[in-house]
Image (cartoon, rainbow, N blue to C red; front, side, top):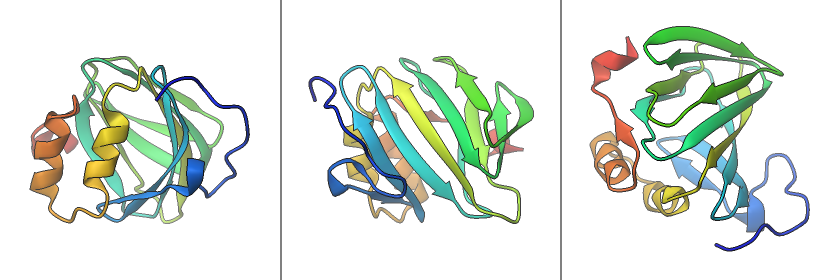
Length: 149
């Protein structure tokens, strides 16, 4: 990807006009470089990303609106607007909108590794098992479903 380009990526839009729909949740890339991958999500009530691990990346979530429930290293925690969640590489984590209102958050992962390529492959994919399989090929390892309990 190269170096960071100056500029602004507006809320609700993706860098270069790009968006990804992954199992019904929309992702807006905000900045993409070799050193970082930033994206915005707008999670409707009931939407979630199951518990998974990034073995080679640190990840952060800045909750901008609403509330996210997170399973972080086996413990349930809650992040509200303005909170920053830190998820070091190798720590199991997943996020869930268990509220009755939408949530919006800015995520960033460092270094990017294979995440942009992963999001491209997952765009409009409808089979959760295929999402898990392809994710494992891109250094994102989903845990068994009982990890989400």
